[in-house]
Image: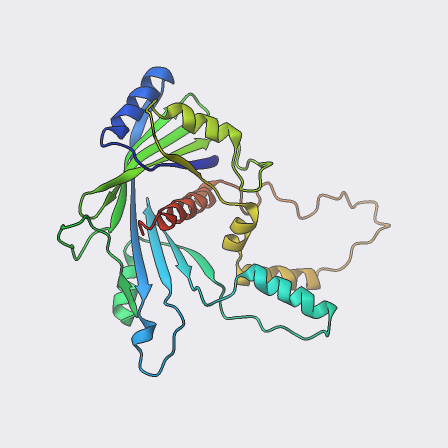
Length: 296
């Protein structure tokens, strides 16, 4: 698993998938590796229907099923972000020393669940106040089951360093809403960018090269900054565990000649684009792209 970049071809024609497939195989000597399929669902809370409960804004939940994992993004517009709380705590410590209360949750919560379908069973058994937000083509009959949106396409390999995933965004009624293109650079688990939005010129150039030369094609890069990703990756239990370990660890002896300075180092860092972390970041980017366009 490597570093991944994502792009949207907003006005892709119905033949877009075949055009990209021909371009990759003819001009990049790519090899077809299999199919690419994602299932996406969106929900909204109905807390406002509870008598006597005042809700400023309902919460939203989006799920993306990728292979055997389900990635869940919950957003509560009324809750603060973790960055807001950290800033408030720092300001209070520098002024009157007042302890700032920590909220029960932050604005964004990102979960990884297994197996697929388990979340729906829990919501049904608990009679949770969540209802699906179904997206269909105009005039199409709304189905009561199955995914609300899917990404359907192919996975290609270009040489030994690149994987490229391309697919149509298909609504439940069959309407196509452009395409998603994902390039994965396999040699590196993380690729630091000099730009504020986290874009990579290497990945952008590859994604641009696999697009067919069509006039008036509308394409946008889907990015996430390091600060945004840090907010998503935050884990309350992990943070508390680290703090307790730091308090329990004795201070090192500066006169100990057997201290080498590499104690506690690991070969992998949380947030590197490997294994499920790569899939988590990819899922978060895809959900964010679809939400920003109003598709979810």
